[in-house]
Image (cartoon, rainbow, N blue to C red; front, side, top):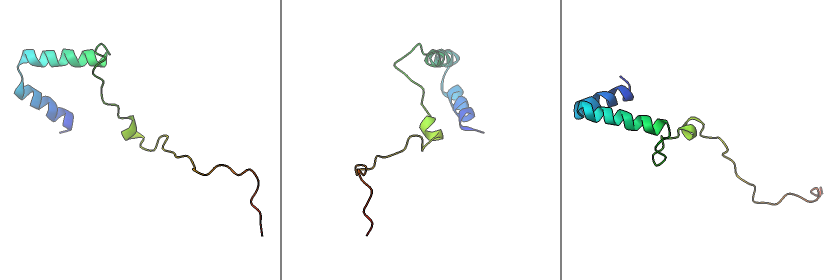
Length: 69
């Protein structure tokens, strides 16, 4: 059983039918972006941990080629 199924079973065991209906309505409002205060978790960074993970070299670029001895 996955986490979501366990979560649904937990909700059903803790709340009444009316409360569950309100939870469903509130979640639907969030998903349709009618409640801008609450945003769903953004899992992009979890799926792509190295996206735009770069750093800038602290040394400035060379103006002239290095002299060879």
